[in-house]
Amino acid sequence: MTTTQTPTHTAGITGHGALVTGAGRGIGAAVAEALAEQGAQVALFDVDPEGLREQAGAATMAGHSVRAYPVDVQATAEVDQAVEQAERDLGPIDILVNVAGVLRTGPVVDMTDEDWAAVFAVNAGGVMRVCRALARRMIPRGRGRIVTVSSNAAGVPRANMAAYAASKAAATQFTKSLALELAPHGIRCNVVAPGSTETDMLRSMWTVDHGAARTIQGSPEEFRLGIPLRKLAQPCDVAAAVIFLVSDHASHITLQELYVDGGAALRP
Image 1 (tube, rainbow, N blue to C red):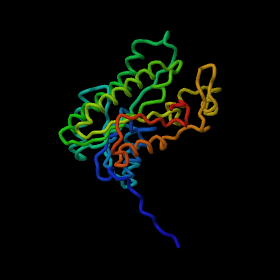
Image 2 (cartoon, helix red, strand yellow; image 1 turned 180 degrees about the horizontal axis):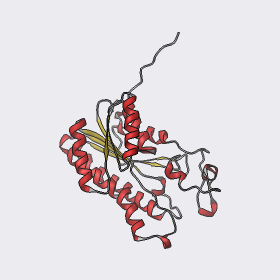
Image 3 (cartoon, rainbow, N blue to C red; image 1 turned 120 degrees about the vertical axis):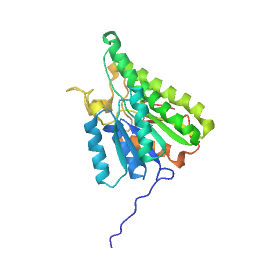
Image 4 (cartoon, rainbow, N blue to C red; image 1 turned 30 degrees about the vertical axis):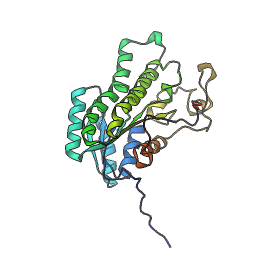
């Protein structure tokens, strides 16, 4: 006899408003999908309108409650207006997940001022702008959960990734500092730090002789350890960590940094 199982929703997510930046693809899309599957009403923020339409269409077809908002997190006015519109459309946003990010690689001696500024404007500045806009609304309500998707590169030096690593370290420490300020208001802030995850961003770093296998094995000449679990992360692996941290199962967890990298950073 075949039985139909009802999906189990994680406590503290169903019925709540959630906002995910960088939701048009990769980890952001996986996080948005996971929140929608848990019964959240999800605002999708991304600078790519086409990616947004694709993700929103798929979610709507699956019966989920989502709304798409083309937003450049580098622009304060766009962020503030989009957050205001999202709350008008979906109600109070109680969950924020910062995923939007950009990558520019290369030696520091070849880096331009524009490269440095562009990476920081999104990876650190974008986190600050969206957090600020929502924190101003969460504080009077006395509730909220914020997760910043950073990177294990924030805690492990990476050759040819100085701007990215530094920007992610900035986003990580910003989120933890924000957690101290918001804790008295019942708002929790945590960080998820993925390692090599099978996304377009990771694939853009591969050359003919530097693909998934070499990423898993490591590269001694680049001072990179391999991945002890012998596999790349999938976006859904990162999303699962985010779901835990925004749920009631993590109700006494704040100021924490959860590495999701298969052991690559050898963190204690």
